[in-house]
View 1 (tube, rainbow, N blue to C red):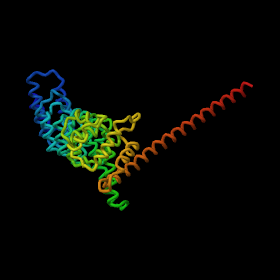
View 2: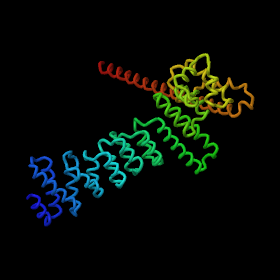
View 3: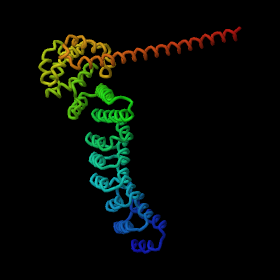
View 4: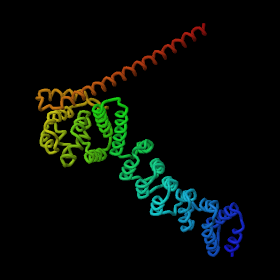
Length: 404
């Protein structure tokens, strides 16, 4: 019998010879026309070689069978449970491994095994979820960069919760085009909080000023993220903000003053527990009918009502080309709200006027930056045109001299 002769020979052969022989045996099993008896003998011989003391032999077997859909499944499973460098070969490539097999190996394997699973051409959602729950940072980084990984929203949230402090993880997540808006916002908040702690530790600003700057930076980035996003994504972001205690009246007011209509509508729909379409109709009604009732149902502070009423009134008016809607505060709208709130008593105004003054300053600076950028661009264009014209004139004079 072939198996008997092979095993007798293997007892005296060197590890290198055994590795070459088992590789040849595996290729013969996969690609040669063998009789059923010969296939059984070849499979039995390969199974026996799983107990070979030399990793070189088992590695050769793994390399030969890793990509083969016709490989014996029990051999592949055994190799997937071998030492890390051998297991990684089949974990990364074998089509015979089921999601359950991969989840099991992700839970019991080391970083090397987890990384191999994360590098597979296609990684199903259950496997991604398992890696998100217990995977090492190195493996998760490969998973996030794998276009064939079906990472669900909950898996992304779990990765961020476990390894959000790692800059490489944050960068890999932000590089994904399918990253949900609320996850992007959570990453932004994590970065802002890290910077806040750094600034406070260095003593560069007071704690109170740092808190305010950080809070306003979070608000600006949150509104900017919602700009241009699908309505479903915006509604998901708003729900996330409410669950995490970030959906504040100041944030909603900033959204309105930044012409972020989609965010404001989603926020009122979430707070008032009303259909989005109904809320959108109420907020876009030029007569303002029903806004007072909607505002009360949303549970927003009564002292802010005049500011919101004036802001939505200004939002309903034409806003120009709308290029910066949702990206920056509108100075015209802020001034409109300030005028509406100027007659409030100090008791009624509270901190509102102070907040609006800061918004006015921010809007003015943004407007100045835009103007400065436009002027610089125009100056650069004029200089380039003058340079071209001078070059053309020089060429004309040179041609005239040559002709003379």
